[in-house]
Image (tube, rainbow, N blue to C red; front, side, top):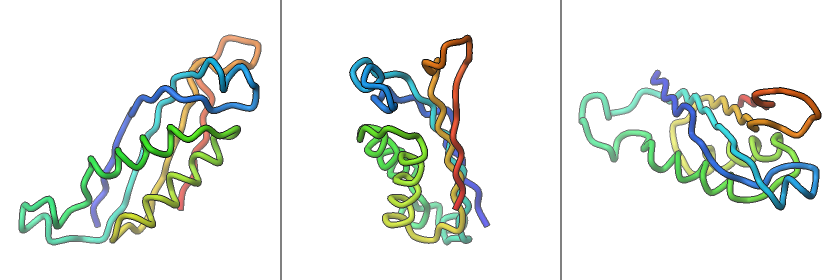
Length: 116
């Protein structure tokens, strides 16, 4: 078993239920934890035998660009895309945090975490 973590990926996106959020946009932080089956990469030292971090990052970036009302929808799309495009994945945890959400008070972020 291998655990791959991509931490604190920062994106500007236009997710939110309020029309202002979709016009102005906001910063989001995405964290991923991926558990994979053992692979030849630990022996071969070849990227073709491993889960490529750049590929995972590109999937997350692509899904973050697509505007959604809810972070739950974005999490699901990220999970679906990774499972569809990457082999040997056993488990994924994705956490998306919206920085300074417009909820009427001081708050660092609001987050949604999903695991599959």
